[in-house]
Length: 340
Image 1 (cartoon, rainbow, N blue to C red):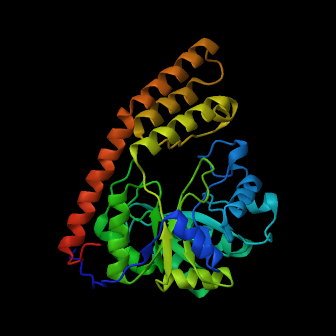
Image 2 (image 1 turned 60 degrees about the vertical axis):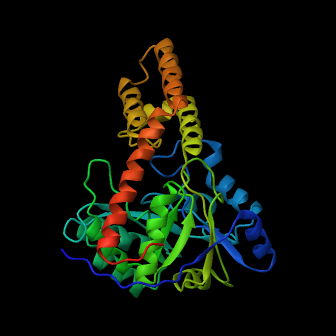
């Protein structure tokens, strides 16, 4: 399939946290548009990821709008209510469209109600048609974005040309804190080529809400999002680095073993610590079950933490992301897309 994209030399600006604080004081609005609570299947249920704790933390950090984007559930809003000041009902939808894309993608949807959530779930789960889904979202006038565009499930193969075509269906692409800077640069490059907006989000599974966010003007969330889609916004982003990956992996491991009963209660576990090696070890812990001797569990925890501290698994994961950035870059170049 030959890919052809027009190019747009403009791009949304990037600011540092100090400049972001100045803009907030001048009346700009801010939101971290990709955050998970303990209602997501792959989040360890600690106090730090309780929806109420996250909401309060986001507001203290100056986030005008707070959107929880749990995987295929809106239980966080059932827990704390749907109408708090600045709270935006949202969800991260998983859809596997074998015909148009060939692998799973994630879509964030904002400002939806229970009826719309049920209808979206029906389209994503039964029709599995990204064109039908995005058509529905536009018809319902719901804000939505293409999350980490170059991501796929571990067992799947990435279809990059299909991603380029799918990106046309979205008003906004994502700059994701869980990706290295080179991959995020390619997301900006693609957004520029298609004249799409870019939104920065943490995609945090450990409570780091507000570490990356988007700034725009807007008296309502709809106005705020429309400004992003119109490329009239600024990013205060963060990228994945080895120190950050080691820190978050160690944090997840500690919380995982502290919540071992939760781990073993899961019918199926798809943990994501940031690298496949540790995830495989953790799944083995889950399979061993609560009957494993306490001494063995303690030894396994210490062993996993020691491996994580070496930085070797993290370095392997970052090497994969760098290789992916090279692939994406080559494809965008062959499609005539100017470098960001």
